[in-house]
Image (tube, rainbow, N blue to C red; front, side, top):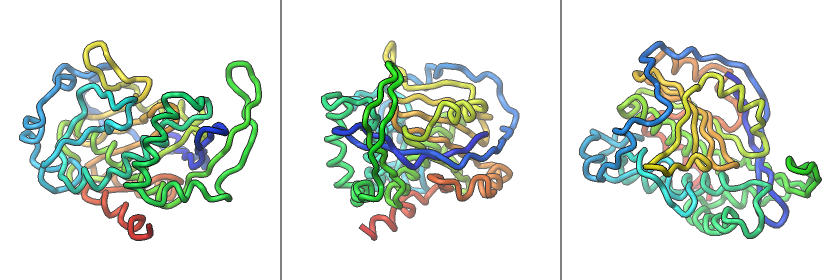
Length: 316
């Protein structure tokens, strides 16, 4: 698999900011053999809306740590979707500490996902970004300051894909420690949720997640195609005839026992490549140089989400 990372974003002048990807390496993971009845749509059991009480009662612990199942966690978070209109599905039990303590990560991811140079000033994306900025400032202090530093932005001309005309954009290198921490936490949450969704139980406490994020300025079609080769099954949230594939979609592979791998896209501005596994052999791969040290990547285990964020909170 091709593992590349974006740490810069493109924004159109007069709207918002953007990010970029580099340092390609080649690495292959052969997923253990398992059931072959992977479907291209969620089963009725997964689509069917369940009550909050039923979800909490069915889980022995928080899907992110060993805490008690106290509240409902949505992945993707409701704020990730336009107008917070979210189909049912992918709802999990979480402890209050993980749910409340990662609100900043949810806000940062939702903001970055909406950033794209084609967004007009009056677009719905621009309107929602203005609201999300307040949430980021409240729950992830310092992230916007990192992006606003003069040395992190430069103006450039970008050729449009429709008529080939040039337009002026601002390229922002969003590679600060607070940005990395918040998006690494969101990516880790996403990976653990996908493990629960497709393996059928929470990632064991000895398991590990490897995740990497990329922004619109660096996820080229070439990079994306290289990653999609190992993840053949397409998914999104669906409820009846409604789906949100234009805002949240992922391709995945899973052995239904110990490992899930996925490439996830949010809107046109944010991508994650994630692996979650409880298999010791696969966890050993996560610690190899091909993974460790890649830009915008993190290795996280259940119970560590708040620890990843803590240094940035103290610094703020």
